[in-house]
Length: 352
Image 1: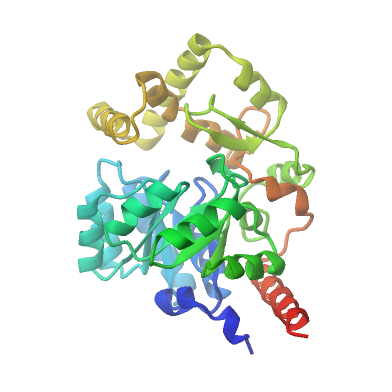
Image 2 (image 1 turned 180 degrees about the horizontal axis):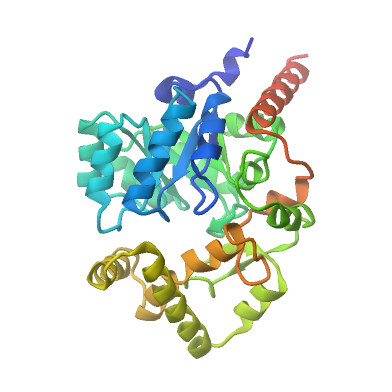
């Protein structure tokens, strides 16, 4: 039986057994991984930011076929068809909409009208206060140790800042992989933990084995935060390709990014007018330069090359520093069971 301390507000809010969230990693968190996480008692999140609308609809249907438990979908608030995607989530009774970028207040209201919880990811106290004022249901707070887009403040400093600043549930991300981390996060006032790299390195993850092997061979110092992927800080595995990318000049980097943007347009099928409108929205909402906007379109293809095509030598692999503490590939069920058992043991030891 789970200790009462491990059944948190997050469990009651979302309807899950354990306060563990699998993040919506682009090209990684497919329907198989999300369904396996939810079926094991956590909250699986489908990564729809890199999916077409039809792929999103198919992914949601697949998850519902595989589990009857709650799950979430990660969206980008700046996608041209985001309202259609929101309506799909409402029709399909998806429990949670997560956002890597803060959703607009009207999107939050629309999702709430349809009975969908809204949980954006943030990396700074001021962002937490802003979206909390819009009425979101919870926050996922990622510290600088986390993979992908990240800030500079470590989780142990950012988490208590945010917990003290808002009145809604806070989920901790960045550096978590075991039961000790879960208990630590709860002690800071969080209601659960979210993990990306740890779930990527499971047998339920669809990432090619050759790419998983690269991750398993890395240490805690084998990640790098670079702006050369999409113009903003991005924590990825340190590889020869990434180091060349990081040292490339602005002109070379911009031409490469533009070429990848064209490739992504062919892949997604999105018309150029929609892509341009999306770029303008990104530029305005994130206060980016035009070079950064072009580079932002670079990201999906660099990630896909590694995570889908299995070419880590030609792409980038988002990763948290925690990669150096992971040495196995359990199933999602085995991982969640292990974390909960470890957390129980920690609580037992502390109570003596």
